[in-house]
Length: 229
Image (cartoon, rainbow, N blue to C red; front, side, top):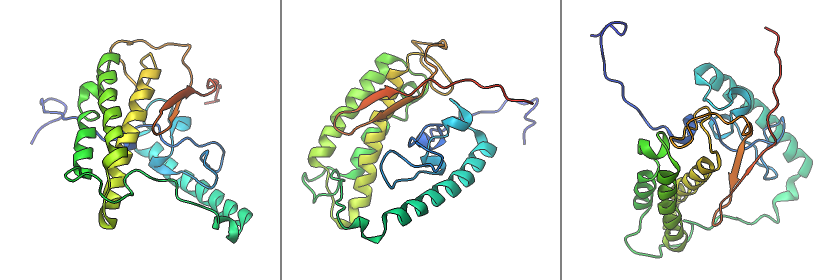
């Protein structure tokens, strides 16, 4: 038993990844639509930057966002489905490739990929106490891993979900590190040892995407507003 106000006690750090972070799938309108037609995002999957800026919102903000965005996204998805009608899916073809084929290389498993990706994402000097040289080195490892994943990762039907999850963590890790290198300042949860100060000229969002060739760009600067108390 301890008294938290007077007794010293150990505090541990737990990497919760991008789910606890404030970023996520970019939403482009009030229905929480993504840039892919027919795709809507909500909750932890969608960016929360518009309600809590560069820090995660904590319990109250996140719970409110989960309920609100779920309602908006559901309404938007239903409205979109009604607008395109039942025949709109007849010409759709799957775009996914990585991890969906039959096994290519014996002994190269989804577990191997996840462990290799985590080694470049979980350590605190790569995802919290960050600097450009360490992040660049980690990104180089993830780029090599992505090449191997694209060329060799496969699974039988029973293992394809795990293979897709392994491909996803590798892709998201690359987006994360590319975004870190694109923001040459410390702002909110994005901290850089080599750029410890806030840069007033970088008052914008960093957007990223792409699979074989990852890109980053900035959104329009976010304006300030006075809110009556």
